[in-house]
Amino acid sequence: MDKIILHCDLNNFYASVECVLNPVLWSKPVAVTGNPRTRHGIILAKNNVAKSFGIKTAQAIWEAKKLCPDLICLPPQFEIYKKYSEQVREIYKRFTDRVESFGPDECWLDVTHSTKLFGSGPEIADRLREIVKKETGLTISVGVSFNKYFAKLGSDLKKPDATTVITRENFRDKIWGLPADSLIFIGKHTIIKLNRLNIYTIGDLAQADENVLKQQSIIKPMIDRCTRFAHI
Image (tube, rainbow, N blue to C red):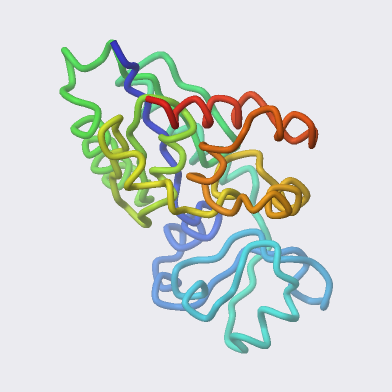
């Protein structure tokens, strides 16, 4: 029997907490940054309004200000973010004790043995979204799948406040056309190597010759697993 894995991602986490603390900010372009009084530092998080101007995480503040002169830059309040993160994790634990954190804003939940109490994976995901929003004011996007990697891809596919289900029946249609670096742990150096092999999408990677990948020193357990999914 397949596992039922959820990946829950708090949307625009740091910036969203700032908007919860000061609701007037929801309608304004907001970013949590390094020192907003200098031209140094980067964007740590931004809300959807700021995102609509093309502002990206890790972008230099001065570059972001060129795109959006009215951008509100706020210093991080990590202790407050930590409290919200812990509060959300406690909500997750109401549904399963198998919660694996991946940073302050992301968690995997194995709900395989929770369905008899709480319903199917998508039903649990929808309930979690509702509860998190009601109790914290924050939203989450949830990916539901039969492994961790596809669950995380699912949470990235539709934001904010959405549930995306990736199954054995639909995963090729859902993710095969996505860029290969959509997969966790594939960074810019690896993607350059993959592109040299004419591997651009997850589908390309899944169907690539494993021996060629090994020869290029770019195969990892995650990539190895992805290639095996091509034959499911």
